Amino acid sequence: MKIVKGLVLGLSVLMILMGGLWIGQGLNIIRWPAESFMIGVPQWSWNGTGLALVGLLLFWWARRP
Picture 1 (cartoon, rainbow, N blue to C red):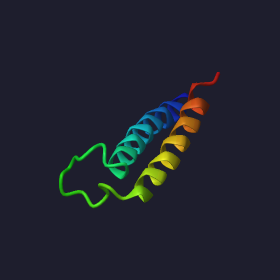
Picture 2: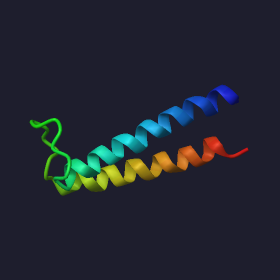
Picture 3: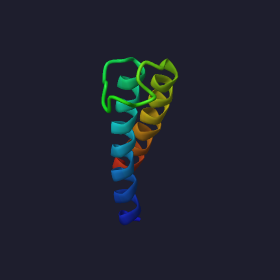
């Protein structure tokens, strides 16, 4: 079970970071990579918010005793 929680913890951190990137691109704050189709499209900020929230829930689950 310890290995599974470690894998979930790593995955949750990646989900939180990717969600933050999507939020920034959707709100036209992060313009990297410059040719990304997600820049300035608000739908991606909502998708990023959902991904980050799921990542936070998984992070909480993996860190509890």
